[in-house]
Image (cartoon, rainbow, N blue to C red):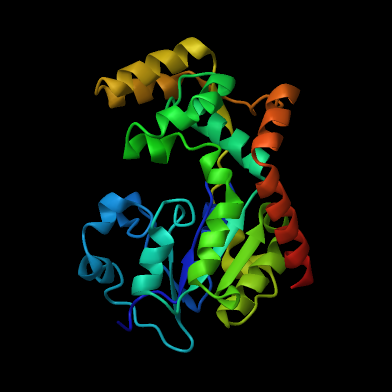
Length: 282
């Protein structure tokens, strides 16, 4: 299995995983197959059913060596039940890299991403309070509407460290990735035991697309697009949505929602603060 990954790049959603992927894949000593939801072998049970031989075929033509490290994105692997166990079963010696964001900020950002794409038609208060009911209805709902569930870092990483040694795991705080990008990617390269870069231009940072925040102009557009998409008229729903979106950031989180989330995610906030402290010491 020489062509299987040396490392897996994990998530969570709305935490900068795609940004980090776009940076490190440009390193001359890293090979990563093109990112696709169809390749989500470890973090989507439906894709896992394709089998290990199918997964190995994703890396055909790539030969790893002491110089070349192979990686793949598995953005849901800490969250999706059973994913870490599957990685350990097939890749027990691999390294895991995760990018985490403050649990409250991550939850809030995910909701607005879903709303902006007409994948969510409820207001944030209703969506958060209905989460426990919604996610039990189907695997699709579990993957789509786990706003708080995805931010439950403490239980997720208790499971990660149950299967992998701590020296196999690197957890990166979102703030460091954004504010100290060069230092942070070099921590990643040290972890993978490949050469550092002196400048972000060495990994062609200027070519990374910048996606500006866009929101629908009003709730009617969201409701209309959501309903069209859900009755099978996805193309029309998306066309209307894209026509009536404008560059605009989500509103500041309301204090009562913030306090409620802080209570729900108390342990996970503490876990994240420790991640930040430990990362600074690296």
